[in-house]
Image 1 (cartoon, helix red, strand yellow):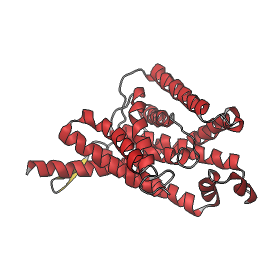
Image 2 (spheres, rainbow, N blue to C red):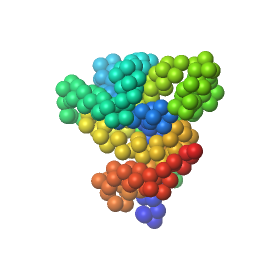
Image 3 (cartoon, one colour):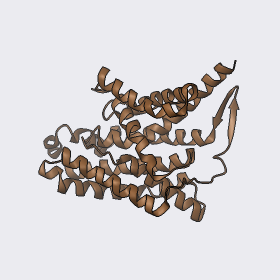
Image 4 (tube, one colour):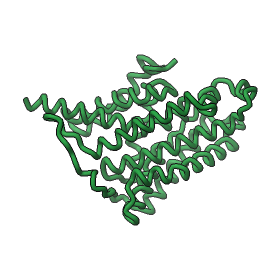
Length: 290
């Protein structure tokens, strides 16, 4: 039956899309969930990662995933630097609530306008041999442009989960927002720990950007479409829960895919905001929140 084939393909696409959404949302799970930093500029770093991947692909023919991995240390350093500016200007003075939010809005505006001036409003895309390929599992078509970002996103989620649960600095990141004084007694500097966490948040965002441009063409203003998605996933999964982020991302991805398939793509974006409002109303702590 046609509707059954549509349903199965929508479910498969939603699950694959959810793996990618997990990669996009990991940085918010770190910054917002564990550090209490409302980084609304997060999606613009996703776009910045996309354009770095585009530039390296167009100029040197680099695979977007390879570019994302190569530039991860660069974006990590950028994240550490950005947190230091934020700390000196706002957090150290106790003015991080509203003024800090304005600071990140300014960062978002500056990066977006810079991308517009550099690349214009035209959509950009990358070329890779596997991006346009698909394979069939019965009536379900699996597109490599969704499968590869999903696999990388799940692997990135697993790697971050292991880092946070198995390493000293990972456990320190989980503890820093709860009791900085106790963390000092354990021999860790909260400022340095937060810098590491924020650097990881920006680095994962940029790597997710390299995955995004594999899924489809991008343009600078697309970052606004992901503000609702990333916060919806972070809140639904449970603030700071990495495993919960993956589960919530799959839920949002499936919900968007089903909505787009049966009601039109224009409704797909609204699903994220609907999920966010529903999560805040029914379970503010999220599925895996404490």
